Amino acid sequence: MESYGHRKVFWSSVSVNLMALITGIGYSWSSPCIPKLNGSVDSDRNPLGRPATLQEISWITSLHALGSLCGPLFTGVVSRKLGKKLTLIIFSIPQVASSIILIFAYNVTHFYISRFLLGIGTGCVFSVIPSYIGEISPTYMRGRTSMLNSVLLTAGQTLVLIIGPFVTIRTIAVMTLLVSIVFLFTCVCYVPESPYFYIMNGKIEEAKKTLSSWGRRESLDKELLEITTICEQSATEQSFKALFSLKILKKCLVISLGLVTLQSLVGNPAIVAYQQTIIDTSKNNYISGDTSVMIISIMQLIGTYLSTGLVDKWGRKQLLFVSYVGLLISLAGLGAYFYFFNLQYNLDSFFWVPFASVLTYIVFYKVGAGPLPWTLSGEIFPPSFKPLLSTLTALVMTTVNFLVTLVFPYMSVYLGMAWSMWIFAAFSVFSLFYIALYLPETKGKSLVEIQRMLLEGRKRNFEFIGEQLISLEEQKLNSFDP
Image (tube, rainbow, N blue to C red):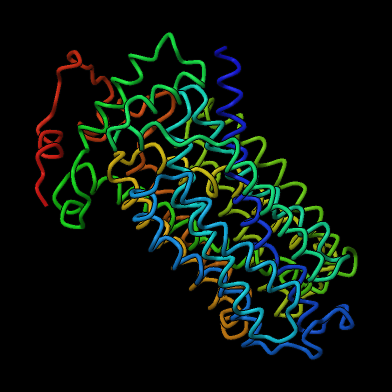
């Protein structure tokens, strides 16, 4: 029965992360579709009937990120009132509308609206799904199930990068619509609500039924007590005042906002959206941009798969550190290539550098820098504050994503590709110091243990003094009056 319950948790995690699959398609959509829209390839497949301008391309690409910024403004309130399951269903509706508009799009305004609506659903992927998976997963499964977000997101990117160059923009929209329909069906019929939501709303019997259906009957009382304890310890009205009054919430914000900001400032939104353009800019006659991107997309899927096994072996902190070292080397190498390319050096012997640099960048990003900030966010946030903290984290991430995606075309024109890459590399260096100094390790710890660790600080040999130990900070969290 327990193994059946664990399978149900796993497949519930897969089902909700079909939204991440759609998000992955949206993230990498620009790479095969922008060349069609600007007329550089397959001009007969351009639904606009004319080449799109640089400004139009910039907005079509970045409006997805702007929509992602708007989505989290509402997910916190909706998930707190209606639960995470219903929130996911509601926010999948803009994704369905986006695909339908794109199927019939024939002017640039249609593309603007479609990309913006798709982004609204994307905001839900990062603000709701990590918290949901963190709440339904047993401790020993949580690392792997949390990584499914990245696996499905990468699968969506891989799918559109492989198929995109050979099909029309409308075909990609139809494909996305079909995934949305499958998500809605599985989420409505199969996915349960989080037991944390039930307990925070006084629905103890519903929480018992959910935990029992996952085969946790032997440990049912223990899990109910643990969930109830952690909900009570953070049971207070959410407010911005609390964020700056409670030590644990300030720690959570520093960790989560720092990670998602650096995640974007190392250039991932730009490199993912423009990877085919970056490779084509190097004027490599040995391997085309289309072929390079397809190879890269397959390798990033492999990298994401590897990270699911490494996250519970190496731990979050070590894996993130290795990831950012790889990003630093990749960006520095790519910048050096474009620096000498602009000086008109003969680089025939180094034709492989742009492709290899983008490849290693994407793989190292998928191993740690991409998925782990959301894994950690799902683990460290106190339950009653998760909607607010997840919303703030997603808002910051999508804001920085939007700005990086919007500004990068102008950076590459006015600063040059070399200095653009080196600026991203500089943020990779900063990220390494940030991880070493501020990041806690949550590997193998229950949600209650993680909350205790954050309250007490990073003491190596901290021991619990029974279940009655409640720190001063916990008392503040219990009694806080906004």
